[in-house]
Amino acid sequence: MSTSFLETTISLLVLGAIMSYLGGALFRHRERLISGIIAFFALLGSLISFSLLLSHTGPSERLLLFGVLPWQVDLLGWIVGEVGLVLGTIVAFYSIVYMEEDTGTSKFFPLLLLMVLSVIGLAFAYDLFNLYLFFELLSVTSFVLVAFRKARWEPVEAGIKFMVMSATGSALILLGISLVYAQFGNLDLIYLFTASGGASIWLPITLFIIGFGIKAAMFPLHTWLPDAHPEAPSGISAMLSGIIIQAGLFAMLRILLSLGASLNWGEIIIWFALLTMTAGNLMALTQKQLKRMLAYSSIAQMGYILLGIGMGATYGVASGFTGGVFHIVTHAFMKGLAFLCAGALIFRLSSGNLEDMRGAGWRMPITAFTFSVAALSLAGVPPFSGFMSKLLIYQSGIQSGTVLGWVGAFLAIANSVLSLGYYLPAIGVLYSKEKAREVSRVREVPWAMAAALIILCLITIYLGVQPDPVRSWVAQAFSFLEGGF
Image (cartoon, rainbow, N blue to C red):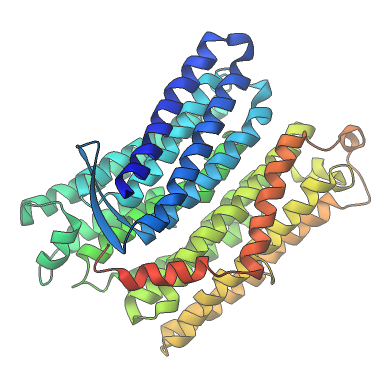
């Protein structure tokens, strides 16, 4: 039964990508509408099928899809895949209107579908070879979509920078995989968990941390992200920060849990976390462009996720792992919402500069309100979802009972307070009584875009007010794990 649900999900994504491209290519005068609608319904069908998988699978189940694709299905992977599908479906619906000024949308929507497919593949691949293939698919679709508006130089430059850094990371990962295979003669992560107990594998682990760290935008490997976000379509910015960088981190987590039992990698992750969140917040404080500010904010938010995972791995604190992965879920929706709101403002104002958005909240009340919810949630203000996931991360540091744990918790709280230094001014700009010159002529975005903002806003509020069952699913998922699965 699990196999049929997953095969349906994959089939809908692959066929949807093909049909979306053909529909847009054959009907050029309706390219965006036809391609976008096909992609949206393919994603919606995939989401329904994938959601049904939850009630038809055990703690961990090995499947051979279509007779050729080996996957290990577990609750942890399902959570990540579900988040990717929900966010991808909302982004597709939003982009049908948002991309109205763009050409070549018959390629945009199929690439979005393949991006979501790669996230699911990374969530379930249990051998290093297939994990690498899906990681490459994720990288290729990502940098093509970053450079989608190729008529201008800036998106092309951002895409090339992303491609070069991503290719460097991929090369390091491939070298790490080669070293693992040379030592063990096997790439199965479940096998490697038992076989690598006392082995010296510090070199491949180092290569994996750096390679996946580039995709996860860990400091100081983050430099592609602030350039990519301002130039990518806003829906792709939402995907990049919402789930793509987290998918890279999730793949790294699978490998570290399987191979790193003999190494104290968790403490290394904690130090990376503290650097990443502090540097991201400090750099965000100086930004004058909204999407670039949110990009640096994403780097800071990755620090919280890394901190929770590091605390869980180093001190065996359950709240660390739970908080880290729960923050992946909450961040996907609140940061996705923030970027879609930024896209809505740019859609109407034709400018991404905060100064040009002064007073826009009075003319675009839905956009301004939903952005305020996203920003306050990202800052960890109760009762929104960001507070609930960050609270677990703070607790993990305190529960560790160590100096490093307490320092980590204190710095995490201090960084949340620091982030208000750029979130609150951004909200204040939107509600300023002194309006920018162009603002007097703008109006709220079309209903499809507004509906996407409202849905993400409701999810952000719901996960704050009612964090269970998602929080309990995450805790349960980690209790099932042996190694990475």
